Amino acid sequence: MNSLFQGKDIPYICTPLVGRNRDDIMEELEKIIPKNPDLIEWRADFLTNIHDTEYVISLLKEIKFKAGLPILFTIRSEKEGGEPIPLSEHDKVALLCQVSKSRNVDIIDYEVSNKPAFIQKIRKQTKDNNKKLILSYHNFDCTPGNQEIIKKLFLCEFYGADMAKAAVMPNNKDDVLRLLQATKDADDVLTIPVITMSMGGLGALSRVIGWVYGSVLTFGLGVHNSAPGQVPIERLQQMITKMKESMGYQ
Ligand SMILES: O=C1C[C@@](O)(C(=O)O)C[C@@H](O)[C@@H]1O
Image 1 (cartoon, rainbow, N blue to C red):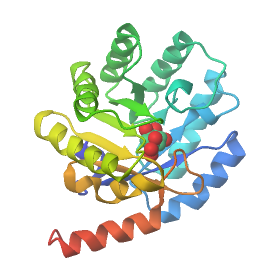
Image 2: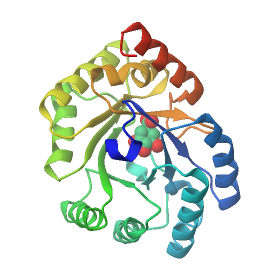
Image 3: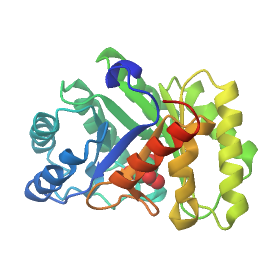
């Protein structure tokens, strides 16, 4: 993971791209790049032409060329907060496998709730093509019990992920605290890096301080958010830098 970011310290800041077509995506990217994220997440579930594999692959090339940064490719499922897409899970896995072969992608995200056979297929393809795999879990309704969150992150490791991610929704301040505790506990026992966030306005704190508890990556808003509570990237960078100075990290 570290090799993708030339030795930069955690947390890595990832900015989502959510345009529906090429022009919107390129315009978004144009505005995001000067803000200096560490990587770009292309949320391809927002793309109208997602059924056209050739189009996706060529757009990916354009994105990588313009960004010159590591690219995380995600097709978030509707059941975990993504956009509705006209692809069956089978077609989606086929597309993810094609994308894995492209030299213009670095990391693929796939939900750990999917069928083991699909996860294994994507794990094999990403490994064969030297790509990293994030297995992920999202809950837009609540923050499950800590054991449940840690179990999900463990499952990601079990399936061979390079990173395990959990994004959950708080219903009160205690939920945000619990997520941070679960992050630390998972980071203590897992052998792979964890990425966590508590979503919504209440959870924004976790996007700023999650790294202190072991979350290696945080999503910052570039132009449009891809989930509730994302903090604008400039503010995120400033707050993290100030915190690191105050904590004696830099
Ligand atoms: O999984 C995640 C995290 C996220 O849901 C967030 O809350 O920042 C945003 C998504 O785009 C990304 O795929």
